[in-house]
Image (tube, rainbow, N blue to C red; front, top):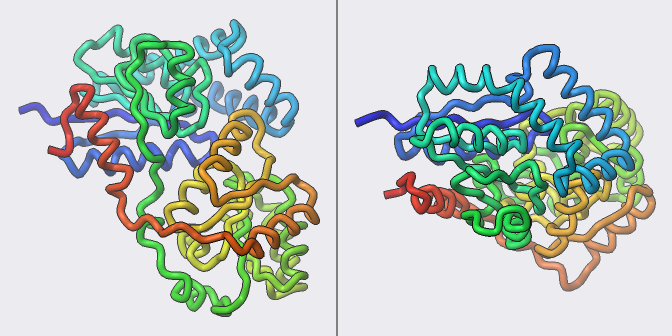
Length: 367
């Protein structure tokens, strides 16, 4: 019997794509499927990949421009967006097919939007490969959705509607967004606080804003700390922000600074509320059982994702003014009706629906 193999296409623009890719690989590995994860940006080639990174970073650093590009071009699939997508796909294709020919997969999963076009072309080329697109965004913009894809995996009814807006008869299944394994095994609050040296009866906030460290993190950390709240402040890969947080910690011991760290499960377990942006950190916080104060700083798809997180409950939103953020956090903590949801202690909560969806489209797993 032929060994089952899966190619998974991710992209290094933010850490969220890789989290989903790795979760998919781990889920199917338990059922004998060998997988390989590819980076779409790396498949562009050295020079083109660096250009792609630079273009994205430039757009992302200008929220008004990114909003305009996302909502005017990406969301509806204008000729500009389709042209850029086609150009990226053509550049990726030769290197991608070299992996296909070498690895010989029978399953292809894309968790990156450019992979939508790649999945469609692969399906036209190889009818023996099951093609899947998995997107955790609230609204799948036009470039995610192509005719030939066998299955779309999404995380909400709104996401289903976004696929059907472009392809009414597409097969779409709802599955929970996955988190990294460590979040399902996070310690209790007392255990985590002992580990981090946080008083058991103190108020404690985890303050983070993705790998880029977007928003008024340093100012908010100082403001929260001045009110007597312990602040676990994570800079991500933002070295300038990390320096500012360490300087704040030197002045006020209520600020506990971190750079890019793998301790986030412990930090979430120790805190009373997570202050973050509308990305995959929200899924992780909900797995651990913590409420959210959301920073409205991620443009484009981030604004759509924020609305969905508010709809899910146990969350509020704040603007970027540091004093307003401090007020939002204290109001959330003071709310007499606020109750933390129970932690999710089993990966099966997302893996079972994921495996069932693949089985339903003709790729049997979980038997």
